[in-house]
Length: 253
Ligand code: CA
Image 1 (cartoon, helix red, strand yellow):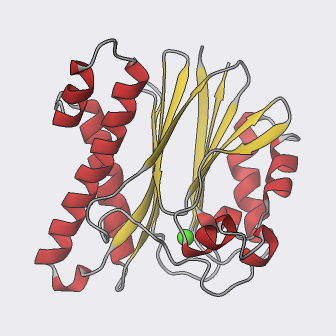
Image 2: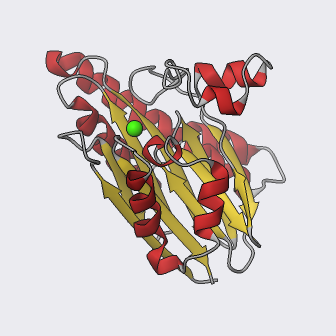
């Protein structure tokens, strides 16, 4: 199956910096998005470091111990090995950012969300940390594939808050884990078997704050893939979005 993919990032109308970063490597099936945080614009450093580290590790020959351990248990599902590799890449990125923030006083406390999407051999593998999201748009229906690592999501899960109210509370952006700031991370991972015309959407909260899932689904159902990233970003800004907005869309053909 061929993949057609597009990405766009916009700093938004208010912020001087764009702390979002994304990478599209169609040839190797690697898609990464990071939304950085930290004072003095160091969110930019964190998100760039994360994207670079993840890409380098996934492209490299480095064989993490964790992967080897999985492979020692027969029979091995290649998807298990791949997801273990994503977890390893995420943690290596976290270690690198944390080290950097320890030697640079101006970069203390920097961290970043990360979503990794790898598409190969008819499967899509995902790993994420933080509140950037991945969605699957299949046959007109939008499914969220990630669960935000936020205090608010925990409150929703515990039944103390509704999705609607969660969009309004002031602490909605407090993360329960992030790459770099929190040291070792425990990404959630998942694998989906591709179907023709599936569209994967990876985005920062600059998209999902101003647009709810119904609106995103509506937009995805009414625009061709080559216009989607532009329309989604434009609609987020039109709806009053003030944050950096970043979108990656990838469709299986
Ligand atoms: Ca953001």
